[in-house]
Amino acid sequence: MVARKNLFEVGAPFDFDEEADHVTALEYCLGALGAELVGGVKRRAESRRMDVEHVEAVVHGELNDSLAAIGVVGAKGHPGIERISVSVYVSSGETEAELERLWREVLETSPLLRTLQVATRVEVTFQVAL
Image (cartoon, rainbow, N blue to C red; front, side, top):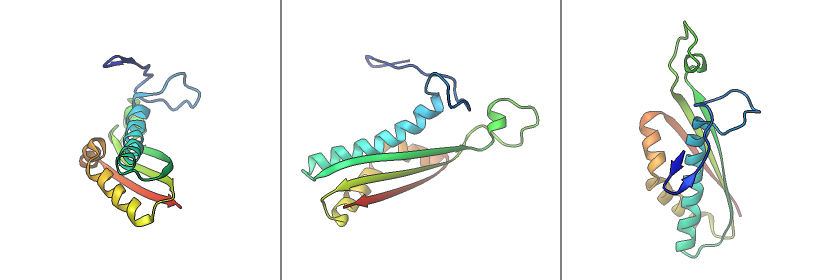
């Protein structure tokens, strides 16, 4: 796959094998959401000259019916994403109130989050380690 001048390999649309050789398309989608939120925190903190030491996201996705996704006859659901949960953790010397304001701005301006919230249930949590 090529995006602008960047090349990245994409495996199967999804894979249940934890030893699979490539990141799946579904994993890229979920990872992109986490990266967008982490990057949003970093970018906004930098522009405000806020001290943010570390930011990370843990993203989980759940399909409506994984059997439908692999084409099993008689599957009851659909192959779409049923739920996404994202936990973003930030380590900073800033006040919790300042970080919460920054976080609200990140949520308001996140294209992927806004798009996915229309399509499925997305639960996002933000935790500060002062």
